[in-house]
Length: 236
Image (cartoon, rainbow, N blue to C red; front, side):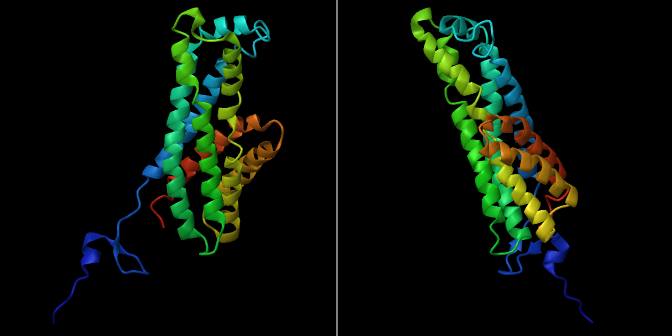
């Protein structure tokens, strides 16, 4: 009696049920990117808070004093820029992975994958724009005093203290993950509850006049959920 062995069983490979083509086990790189994006996002918010000349009562309202104070905060500006852009880049990878996983775990007509992805794309755009002026001013601070107009430095301070904090759209992603969890069982229920609480609060900040407050909750939601997803990343 002869026995025929399935090559896919020997190699451990899997096949797509729709096409029959072999598929590789899904890695965790995209989830690790989410962990990194969340951690870098938190560093970004802290560094942004340290670029505070425009908010310091000792200099607030005085453009010349703000420019002088901020010229001594170049290190904070560079840390802010690096952390923000690192978070932005890693967030793109995480978004692609989350969208792919949600497509497998939700119904074919579900809006959840699209809403989740678009929310994080908006955050990445806010980070890209939020750090967009830092190189201009970081180099200007090292130039002669007439290299910039003090009033523009004050504007830059407000920009750094507002635009990169616009994590509010991550709240839409959080609510989408919660919907996928409670309605379709996509993730463990604790991930759903974290997404309801932190994602919901972040979404509230999105539509409020204090939308910059989302920078305090959005990166935390991303970090916590990404750590939770590490256990499920290899599953379809």
